[in-house]
Length: 473
Image (cartoon, rainbow, N blue to C red; front, side, top):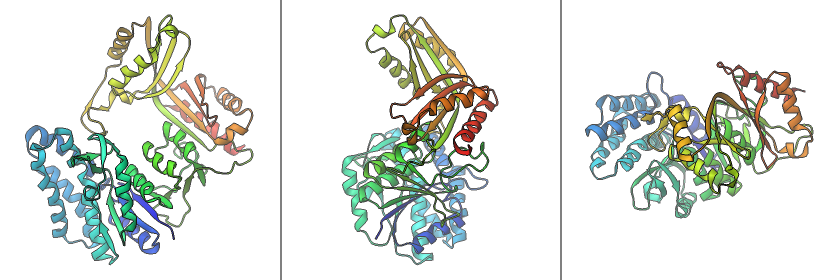
């Protein structure tokens, strides 16, 4: 007998039909034991629930009042999903009242703990109504489990929490509970009982932590795609679907742009050796993509995937005798960290260090950890360059914008001679000049940086020619 943890994201929870399809999955396969839910995603004509809650929390902190129009939109989201399923309006209103009842807690919580309380409510509202639908409408044995009651503890920043070790023992009790366990993702509490949330997209983390805690046989992640493609289907027509890919390979691809799972969500299942199945809710009988610990090497197929990341800038820092200054690289990274600019790649020479970062980290960085779609501040490029030069006492600091990264991944690269040469030749023949190249020490990835066009035509061309080289020849 198996024990499957199934996660359903915002898209899967944004229509009555999708919620019905999810219930069908549990009715057909009793190995599916735990249903981990996100908040309602994009309902036509309405913002996402989490975005509404984020905005409402900010307004409440400033004015003391949660806006009525936002409450109305949150209500309309839940009406749109659950009323067509037969859930009575008064039941929906009763669950949504939980949100209103929490608003006075603003005065007893820190601002970030209050934000966590409100922003994380979307998952609970959906999951409580989902439980009602499963029990009362579908007549399935289901129960809602509250993270606060079972002891799902997070530490760290209230808006960017990480699971505490004792949580795994508490969550392991889920395995002994009967029926379908409906569990809200994203939110939890501190070990002092304060509201906490994972970072945005944290329902993947919740599901992965639960899968590890109960030693699940499989973790299913239900999406609107057939699985993971070997290249971006928006660029390559009908790319191959990965049947199997290893944890390490998908982490390399996710590092660049394959937003299949939350980056940190891979670690618990990876450490526990639990397979992850990415499947299409609209095609439940299709195999999807299985993420596993190891897979067989396919002869003459060293590459499993090609990923591109556009909108990169390269910051070159020059300083004579840099190599003699102990801790210089640490100083550089600290300056980026304090401005919450993620470093994508580092290249060095004796007197130069090049930092590769996303331009969006300068333009769209959120003030609050874990909140990616509101309350932003902007960092001026030139001011930041002057700041680096002054703080590091550098000879020269220069920024080069409009760059793109390309990542070619496959564990078979370790056993294949000449892969890097094939990459370089293919791009050269396409007129793409490589400015930076880095082959990882694991020999399962090659990362390239090159100047792109304003319409990103070179990065698109790079994906096309590399896909042709490794998948069509």
